[in-house]
Length: 328
Ligand code: NAI
Image 1: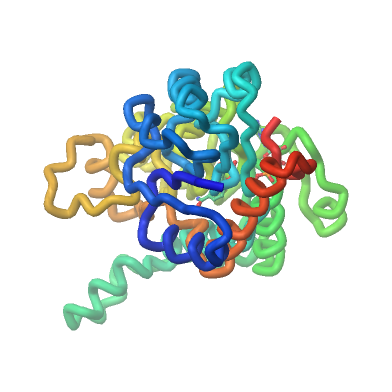
Image 2 (image 1 turned 30 degrees about the vertical axis):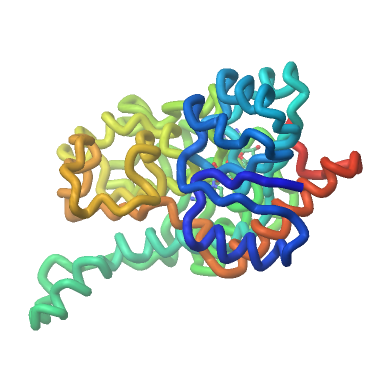
């Protein structure tokens, strides 16, 4: 099978080539898949795409005309896909739903700990020979209430880690997990979760129902000084509401691994560029904000699993076998 891999970075080449072992012809492109680059896949049986590639109707139409038969997302989320258009065009799309929920959950907990104990600030200070503790006062996670929005693969791992810290864990999810309830997680209405949580961590997918779920009204309904963590998808938060929340102190801490307009920024080196996104740059000026560039998934274990599942998904589709990771 000839597979064009869009948005590929050195690590994608490394892990996909290693999982492939010369079985398929992999064509690595650094370009993002958008309507204008879809023709680069001409002559390929399949394309392999990532979180910021565009799988809208126009792109899908061009891929179909270019002879592409299958699409493999090398990620879990599929908010960038027009599923109805893919169905109409008879383009099956597969994803990697469970590569390592630990990778993302542990990253979310890492953001919580770093913001709480101010590791990012302490690291800078010690390098400058400044051993003052002024401004580094943290709080015990033990005994705090953490609200999880979404208790699927990632949220449920986060819940168990937090229970291990001795936190009270509240959750919102249309699908409740009996196992988590038995472990001590309490499902509550969203407004209760907002009102009672010291820390709120988002682990739901981006859908029309969760788009801008966290907006100015939601932030106002949270506890003053709340810590908000987002490792799900940027547009679950209305980014413009964050600045006011941080300036007023309503938001005490903010940890982001994803950002609404990240496709213009993340996964590339912009260190020599004048970054045009003023909202993003303003966010980086707050001492109580920690942003990582969508690296939650980025562990050896996750990358290995993503590469092998991506290829086996395409092999299933090409062989006409049932593909358990088919989207929709
Ligand atoms: P999942 O599908 O296993 O779990 C998502 C959960 O959210 C489900 O239980 C679902 O019922 C729930 N949900 C749906 N709508 C909801 C709503 N309105 N309110 C509350 N809960 C709702 O997905 P998984 O694997 O846990 O991933 C969650 C999200 O994390 C993905 O959709 C993706 O956007 C993001 N992600 C981020 C990564 C990163 O590197 N930062 C890597 C992988 C995923």
